[in-house]
Image (cartoon, rainbow, N blue to C red; front, side):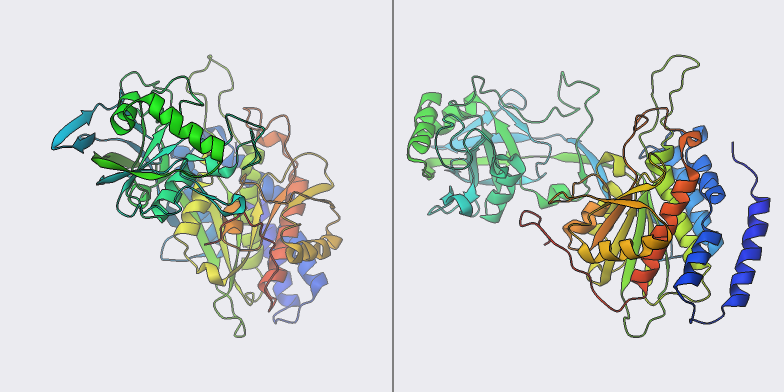
Length: 536
């Protein structure tokens, strides 16, 4: 149940009036800004927002769901009430993700000597979850393991033309049957063994389709091992349908797992394929070739359904003339994991997600209110985003990065708030400090008035565990404020009465002070990107 906020509104109005009387021009100093943050961002305010977002009535804010929609409306109302305006005529950005299933009229066939051999779905071939949905036909090329690995001086596509052709590739990578060999990493798999890596590599070389084969040296069963699509007979009903960007099927080429009957048709026998695989393993060199006298036709049909859910986006327009068009982002995910569909009567079955992440969302709203109540706007524009779908794979930030409402090239920094209200009252983790040394320096400076013991994550890479990761992948400097995991994480016990509202308000104040500094600087910030991260 929410508490009445009449007294808070009255207090807030009084504080803001006094602030405006004290300062009606841009000349306010650091001490004044710190006092403004302390006056406007209060534990009481944080607790009220958490109480609503983590209430039982919102049923755990799962993406999608009516509870999530109610939370989105609440956030939009909070934006409107304090003067945070829509960025593109609306506060709401629909998630660009869909679930997929197999459609009708799928087929896979080989043509040789004017004879067509048709294969059976599920028995002979099964599409993978990230297959493209489209027809493909052409000559067939055996492309070994389908790997191009310059650092290992290995390329299955060397001296073979696959443009407009369908490639047949083996699972895994050379050396899996002999861990003593030096190529790749022996028994330890590298990223080149991944199926999506093989699919992307085939597409880059011009292939129009991919057949994936379980090599007889590595597998005792040669049955097709694609995805358990909901429409296939015997599929476990509890397995979720695959999910991806709604236009993913148009960007990927068809890729299917094929079984023994297809192997025999392409190579004559499984023993022949086994000898070819042994040849690659012995020489540790590619042995790719065009399969003569045969062509293949395939048609993969997919149906799609939008998952629902919305980001909530508002902003304050910057006033600076020296840095026109630049912006920073302050974000937090507002979704959680829903509720137990099957539960005992009178049991607690709702994952309220008070710390994860009603606390971070409340912090983002508090930062927005603090910006809106400043006498003058900052130099840079500030965009506030409540992300949906974080718990299902960073879907909200993925949608925003793919369809940004502000040019990413002019987005100078991103501050993320995720789980900011638990554990040691004086400790705060800043994740991304190593990769973003300039931002970390600003956080440390602003923290002098807040007094946290800052714990800086020393990992070489930023993990894909919250929404700042998608910004990092695009080369946008970012940092995460995080107070750590706890025994209530992703449990029904993560309730509003367990948060530390005082700590959450201090984290929000530090986020505001950091964001205000970023929004009023005329500089760009260093970001350290590992070689493995793609920023294209």
